[in-house]
Length: 109
Length: 114
Image (cartoon, rainbow over all chains, first blue to last red; front, side):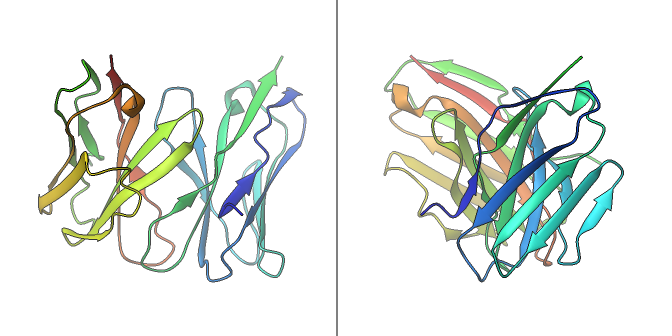
């Protein structure tokens, strides 16, 4: 079983749509969780951290379910500029981040 | 503030040649990571350092790959001899020890081995 699994997509949605990405992780000792965004031919960049209580940053909402080892990212009112690959990332304290392979989002007008 | 700096940005070379990739982490970061990204395998961790000491190199594919961190501000990833299957984007990232601290990536080196 892979450590971090994501649906690769692609998700093709119109502008203004709400889209949700899911991610599962295998190591119950994982302590930190993030969503990164990667644009084509660019480096991954931190989108947001994911906290146990869930957190929101503008149109983006991240949630964590430790019991199910499940992380989600919700994007409301999608913009063309949201088109990218979204990487689910987990780690244990003092170790390297483990990246999922990413979910590709394409927002069209 | 300067981010993670990698060089070269692009490298095209013939198989069998030695390739050296360079990275300067963000000042004050005590972790440094080398990743490789391909379409097939996604982003793979090759090796990471803490306070200039290699902690986990289990992701290094073969003995042809080696990495060093002689000081807190510089690291190299070397491939010798290079092979066409080494073609990929190689990212360096740095981070802090504290929990919940994310990593910051360099722009990457696009490596093509002919």
